[in-house]
Length: 278
Ligand SMILES: [Mg+2]
Image 1: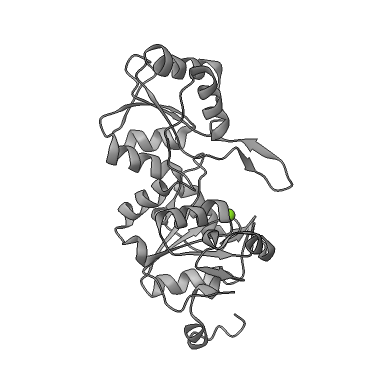
Image 2 (image 1 turned 30 degrees about the vertical axis):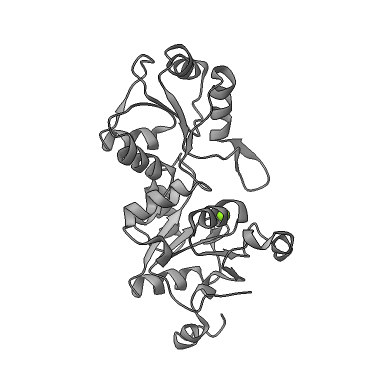
């Protein structure tokens, strides 16, 4: 285990497997986050799931005992809206998505249309209301009118459920559109793409080297941090086992490996805070 010897200005946390597992906070998560806030560090929670508003995640964290404002939660609804505002504020977009993304785009003043003749960007997202009519609009905008680009909120093939089942995610929608148009999806604003981090850094206004990305998956959060040149920490309370690290070449290793999340705080400070069990 290699733990930090300093505190950072900003902490970007994955949620599942990092802060909570199912419906329980992981050991040390609450006191860590409360302490970081007390020390006036920036705390942001990250998730790829675009089917919920940040408010829902904030409510879940609050219900689990970690009171959190929605502004501290960044999902791909937030990063897609931010990416469009920064890069294509005038574009007419067609979101194949559920309501949270549409609501966010509307609030940001981004124009949406179902008319293929004026669509500049088709956004493929996790949409449980997906149907042939939507595929036809995307097809006409991209293939027939040859004007729209294809982007996606997140690259996930499926969203895992407790108990082993899951639900087809945004990659299924991207796949359907790519298959009929021959177009390739050009942009993904979710993990592991560094666009997610860049958008967040622009939103929080911190220098990436002063922030650490913390998660339980080597191929999502840690990959994203490595590709963006940012400090990173894997916590072994979720997806990654110690032997997974042994199998990975050194260049895929994060800066820190933690057995529990509150080990993000250097040992001397943990003693000072009276965290005897950590
Ligand atoms: Mg996770």
